[in-house]
Amino acid sequence: MKTIFPPKVDPPRVDNFPPCGGSPVGRQFPISKSKAVVAALTLALLVLVMPVFIFAATGFCEIAEGVSVPCPLGEDNVGPSSSRTAGDLISNIIYIALMIVGSVSVLFLIIGGFRYVTASGNEEQSEAAKKTLTHAIIGLVIVILSFVIVRVISNALILGTPL
Image 1: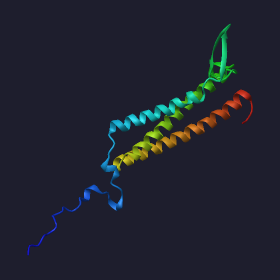
Image 2 (image 1 turned 180 degrees about the horizontal axis):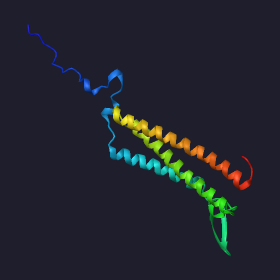
Image 3 (image 1 turned 45 degrees about the horizontal axis):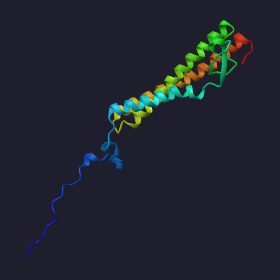
Image 4 (image 1 turned 60 degrees about the horizontal axis):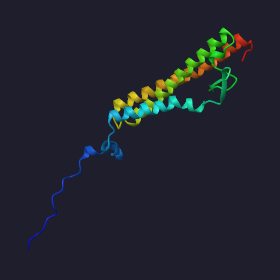
């Protein structure tokens, strides 16, 4: 009688699976660096452009007789150019600068989170992403505290009120 042995099967490769029972999905479908950069830049552009749509024109301002233009800040014209005093102008410029720095900090939060998610188990990349996240959070806290400090100082100097 002839015995039939099962076909020879190679044992599963150990390097395809991460330790501790994790999922090998990140290694099966890696995302390329160029796609990651494009996705991060697209998301950052969306975050930076969204305020334009949120603060869309609410009315029209008449700049000359019969000439009206959209007023993004309403008909009260409460922008940096409507400052009555030099102190108002300086505080408005500081607020705009703090908004830009805050936006950059949020952008770095997004980039750091994206880098952390796409690190796919690489310790060096995940540590760099954690540092980026930590520094972005520190920057965001500094910007928020700067808003408070500028508000208190400007109210004390310009309006004469303590808060």
